[in-house]
Image (cartoon, rainbow, N blue to C red; front, side, top):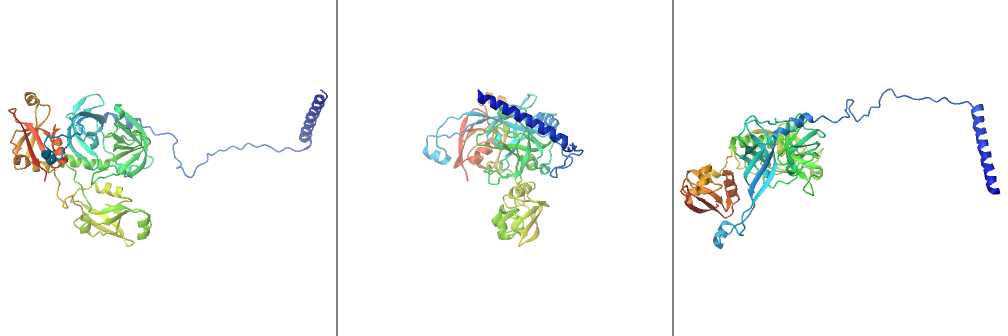
Length: 480
């Protein structure tokens, strides 16, 4: 108790001494004046433009004016299967082995209306191998679609429905897109129709090497707008609501969106659909060179100032480049007065031309710039228009089978031979008016099915069907 009283007295004495010290300091020592500094002008950061806005862009106009022109596509197709005739020699000839019943499968995706009379662009992989394609508009109307043409090298397809006064998107210019620019992805992910997501352009001319076509062109617009299965074939639009790309792929380990999506630039899309409308096939222009991106090793070897450009590794004898004077070891830096930094940019630029077009190419050779004018060629090495060879190969014209005839013959699909000239079908013994229902046991709904199955055939082709009198028949011919 005595210790507690001593501690209390000491604490009181310390408090009194501190109070006296503060009073003495304020009484006998001069005080400094306190000044409040008011900042009258905001600090400007040198890295920001003076008029930078902190608010996000208003994307409602672009969304509302685009969503009605994006459609939902549903497809039916036969699952891949093989068939055995029971004869091993015939199986060997036809290149088929196993016996499995065909199964009807369904798929879905998106598409973009590009004209008021019903032309629709989508991805080739959305409708590939489809026997039936149905288009569902944003107002819930449904239409059957026919395929105008496809291009596997760019993964673009053109469809047509019979309708008028449809809402459609106008083309923008994907070359004018800038990194960081806001864009919208519109489509039907997971069958959730008319879905709009926003993001920015995070990269340009991206090559993912996901297209196995021999003449594949990959120069994707990369964005962080959320895209999922079902968005394929949908629209990528700018803030003005203009079409700048067709959403095609995502980078994902799960199969769903995980951060990045990719779209075919509209500069490529425009050229492809123009060719499909006019010729039924894309007129691919080729330089006639084997190329690769310039890397640090090549740049050091050639003493280049910058690690950019397209290195020419080989120049085939019959190509446009060889004839114009381009040599192995040249570095292409410009096409048609546009600078190219890598192979994707070069391919995208060349894809906008047709065989027979003249194009100006600038290369670096021994440290000096040299200019050449090339006349681009097609895949056959000349400048002629390339047209589909299947009809000439088969020697026939075809027409659809009307519903009355289908009902009478108790068939659900098939195409009829309208005119028959010299070709594989006539040589096999087929006569006019024969209705082809199956090729190598695959159902044939339209001419595109016929072309696809014959193109995929190995060893031989089995044609099945019937004549208008109900007589069933089958024919076989070989693939040269």
